[in-house]
Amino acid sequence: MMTVLACILSFAVTAIAGRFLIPWLRRLKAGQEIREDGPTWHNAKAGTPTMGGLMFIAGILVAILAAGWSRMLHGDCKHLYIFGFAAIFGLIGFLDDFEKVVHHRNLGLTALQKFALQLAAAVAFLTLMRYEGLLTPNLYIPFVQAHLVMHWPVYMVLAAFIIVGTVNAVNITDGIDGLAASVTVPVGLFFAVVATWWPGREQLGVYAGALVGGLLGFLVYNFHPAKVFMGDTGSLFLGGTVAALAFAYDMPLILIPVGFVYICETMSDILQVGYFKLTHGKRLFKMAPLHHHFELCGWSEVKLVAVFSLVSTLGCCLAALGVLGRYQI
View 1 (tube, rainbow, N blue to C red):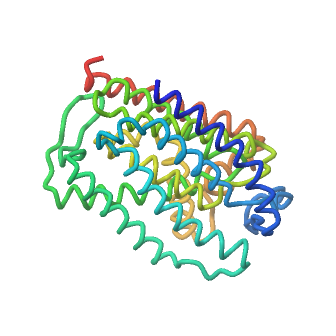
View 2: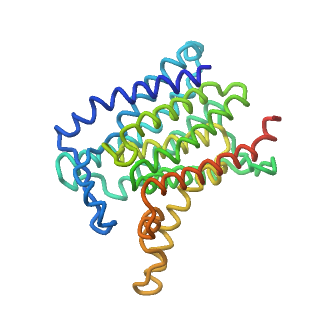
């Protein structure tokens, strides 16, 4: 019940916040700059307000505080750990967005500085989760219901890089109207459902429900044609949320099926760059990341979002089947 309440509250707060945030962003002239090497028809989107991720961040925060309050009074603050961690990544994105679209200066963080901050945040979060007893070095393997026992230092290094990779994969996926939000809704639903199977993880279910509601509220404004973009503020926050939830449930490998779209988007970018260098100028895809390739193949943005969301949903359904044995369902 609290998960459903969190979803409804987050949707309402996000949708209402958008009515005020979008005009404010327009007054700031916080318009998106379009990549010169992107599809030419994206130039029409130049000037669309960005940093819209602030609206679902606010929606999620209000919802998890309201819906999770009773358990917070008894010291159960798991959902706040997730939010705090994701908010750090959102702040990193906000600093970049603000410099680029408000001050029109590329004086934000360098790639190395971003990586260092993301890595530090990941290690801090993992340390906290270990201290709270929510994390073990036994790497859970879905489908076979087995664990790979690892030494803590090895596990921490692996986990930190999984988190940073996930965050940036979600960031890459945010390239067309409604895409990142739409493919993440099934991911939030997956974690919300799993919370109902696992006693003691109710607060994580509250957070997952708030995530779903916030993204649906955001899609009111972000679905094609988008009135606002989430910016790095939103996409890095989303990436931090997805990664943190996977580790809070102590099953990071579940990111492979639930994050299949993110992985494909990232791999297309890596393969494109590698192939380009190896062949001295040839391209494996018409354009990377993958959603741009399909755009150049003639797919509309609405079709792309629908297909990618369906793939994400199928991946999450597969993930649910893969963990059923863990909870004796």
